[in-house]
Amino acid sequence: MAKLDGHVAAITGAAGGIGQAIATRFAAEGAAVALLDLDLDGATKIADDLAKTGARAVATRIDVTDEHSVEAAFKDVASSIGAVDILVNSAAIADGAPIAEMQTDMWDRMFAINLRGTFLCCRAALPGMQEKGWGRIVNMASEVAMRGHPGLSHYAASKAGVIAMTKCLALEVAGDNIRANVVAPGPTDTSMLSEIDEETLANLISELMPIGRLGKPEEIAAAALYLASDDADFCIGTTLNINGGTYRQ
Image 1 (cartoon, rainbow, N blue to C red):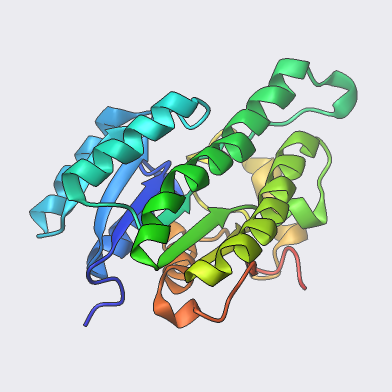
Image 2 (cartoon, rainbow, N blue to C red):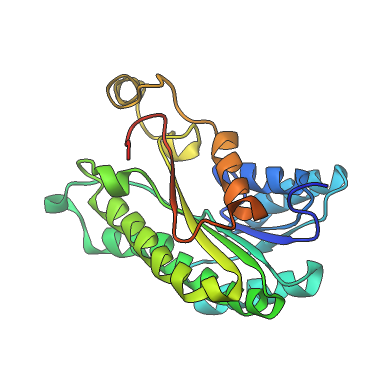
């Protein structure tokens, strides 16, 4: 029996990168998957590809910063493939600037997507999980939230907020047989790193990553699968660091 047979998983940011890898892995493990993304065309293509393998997969447009969009997306998923009992909040952005040069709207947008969006999606998914008496929430943070890095104060702070919020949420819902945990990836080979020049990227790998390479989206997906399955029933508010050695605790 596959690890996620009988479950309905919603993955935000699923039109590419880590979110796409998670949706693909969860579908292979038997879950019906909803790929939620602002890029509906991208999410639909991936959902169609998964459906060709025999998986139940749908795509739904979502703006994680907008309360009404989030509520509508989860209602659409429930009506098409069932109430969500596994949620992975993978939608995120990353950019950089020193605090002295950072514009307020840059700070606000980071928090709107990375933290507010995670909150809104958690809240939307909880009623279905509570009704079912089982649920898994996997929130994506970053090792930068714990290590820090120049020019990434807004990104690090938003991801630290995700970790803190998840710890509180985990305690609130443990009695409902819902487990909320965090995956904190290190630098991973996705489009989020595409704007970094080759020299800077090489220095990042040589100076900060003992493993000597970027992470693979599939490696992050494997960690998310663990936390989304019954194997992680004893994990409550855990942060799982998958980072190639950039942060060790």
